[in-house]
Image (cartoon, rainbow, N blue to C red; front, side, top):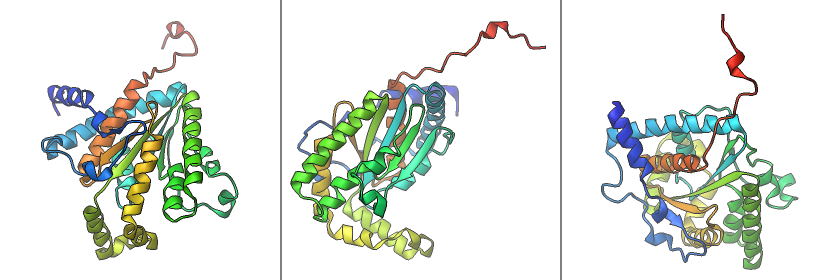
Length: 284
């Protein structure tokens, strides 16, 4: 890609306004009113999109290298979404060009017997990033105000307390220099049907299917309501939720990559200074 094209792509992403997808604190959120597909002309064409993703991957690699080297700040990236919304896929795509040094992906499923004997944040805090780390949560502490609420395992009073606990937990991370970036991958019920059917039709993808995929689909309205309540209650100025249109896999990946680059750039990362006087070094 020519240098002029690279510059144009960089400028385009630097000016991209993600605020329409940002949930404002205590917003009355209706997910049915939010797009699951990009608006016309919002997504670059195929070749342009590939070029932008490549360039953003290179920028992400440099930014993450600075984060890892300096060890003064950290980043937690949270992905939530309905089944098949693309949590695994976006991680594979966006982090293809990033060094594994200082990067971890953590997936949270049903709590183990030991985990269930602790408070719901116990297993989460153990996986939180240290300074210098970028950690990606594939599902997260939010499962404990989503699945548990929909299934009736907690009531509204306990759910409200958990919202408060989550806000305190994320504030604690922020006080320690950890930026918390939260993305809800917003998929439509029709698109989920297509993706589930594709998995049913392909024996190589049968391993991805779980009984809960189909049980949870039958509870779509209840999960939608639970997500609306959770996102509204826990989106803050310091760590907002972004609703990412996820019916288009390329656009989903492009959106998350751009948002992540912009977030890291806003962290004002600086490489560490050398630990000794380099001017005294003479190579022979």
